[in-house]
Image (cartoon, rainbow, N blue to C red; front, side, top):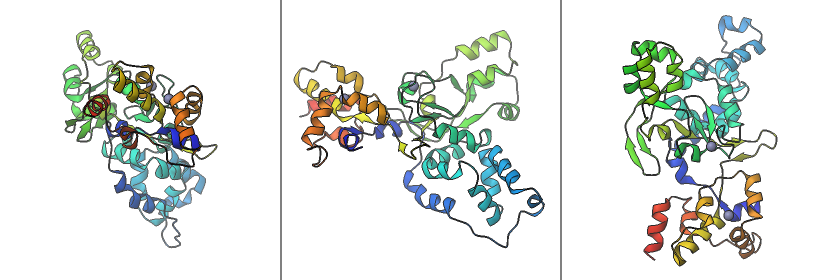
Length: 332
Ligand SMILES: [Zn+2]
Ligand SMILES: [Zn+2]
């Protein structure tokens, strides 16, 4: 863990490129959601006729929106929801994602267990690398490279889908998970976007309600590149065995190698390709044994005793993009 602390950093700029809320808003909410509740007076009325295990099972199987609505009934309901499997882990480690899920109106399509399963999945379903994100239309664990390189399942705005499907909006919304994206700043290019309704193309085409022409139009329509940033949010990985939480780390040594290459020749080096690589702790330790600059950092820090000398970009959690790194070093 000391090597990881000294020679790696988390890419905060990746988290900022997707749907997000302000983490500072959550601390008080988290405390309230996790508060131990002792209640003697309130009851759930007729529902209490069921054995407690059955009530917990219902909580486990209903969608997230209904579960949180149920929690509002009274203190007894809060107490029961508090004891639902996965609730504590999700509220403790995935509250930011949970808030995005609620605000984007996708919460009624998935259960708390779906979110808990994604939280406990480490790697991107598409490429197998460490995945620090969740693709909201299907609750699929994914990585930033797959978001950036357009490897996610196809999604389209409702404005395009409605031209291909002859269904009323309310009927379509009842059949296909519809994400109401958050207004905000998206992608590494920091582009401002308003709210947009987004649907997974595959789910719409499965409805078999279109003619051949509409189906072709649906599958050939190109999503606007920003939609995939609007339909994902960051999600840490919870290792249930150790209880450890990982957000994904990049190599500070590779950043230093890139900066050296840029300031000397300006030509790309191997470090350029490794710069955006996000590792799990285990993967990073394998990389560390091959990365001379990361080992240098570790040695220069006197094996973690001293503060490591890292660049501005590492200190800022990568909140310079590649273009900014080049500008930064040109200006020196
Ligand atoms: Zn991936
Ligand atoms: Zn490295």
